[in-house]
Image (cartoon, rainbow, N blue to C red):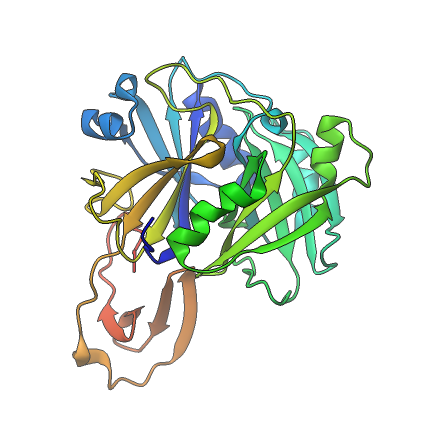
Length: 345
């Protein structure tokens, strides 16, 4: 498999049987509001090998900074899953500002708290809790209090920021991670650690340790693979996506040569070229290619007042006359829209 220059994780897609309910609970309890709604196009359904999905309603949700990163697609054929017993995407690890404060919000919500806030065995600087969503999706809500070398982790910029680690469940950590190492052209870290939420869900002794692999990506994001035995494939109705966390989208420098590419028709990354790939552990991933940089030297002489990061792959700067966005090594003006728009660089 050719190296593609795997960049940050961009988004996650959840397959649900009740879109309105999912939108409501994510908005009311996690401050993820509606960004845009549409229908799955026949072309995308075909490219995803899910022809029955054509015309299905879908909605993008955005965080409080206006960054859309969660897509929810609805069909009456989307079933419930027991997330800790099947191969595939297990959970979405989301950067949050205060895990303990979120517990008070979520305790009496439609989300099921399956792990109360606790510091990770890896580091006391990482505190996390786990919840299960309306479609069986697992969310790790993680507060990073300080840097944790050698990992590059984000500090939350709002109460519930964005996905930074998709977690895959596999019966063979090495085989599953090999796929991503070849895509990214870098080596993963492998170690054993206690995963309390898995031990509790599987009825294992609390001190049981599991083989884990992590792959550092750009933009303070990672991929994590947890190895667990006695896993089965999740039941997926023919022509549809897998239930729960169905698909993870990643940025890449370039798409694999000869891949069956398509143009993203709508949503925050409309117009970009993409390809869907499958691999070990029944995972579905969408690779989305970044556009070429266009030089904008007009703004490079400006004295910049303030620098801030809008999302993992964007840096913005303020100036008394312009708002600027850093595209690689070049500055370009931000075009303001009535609707929030994600910028992909």
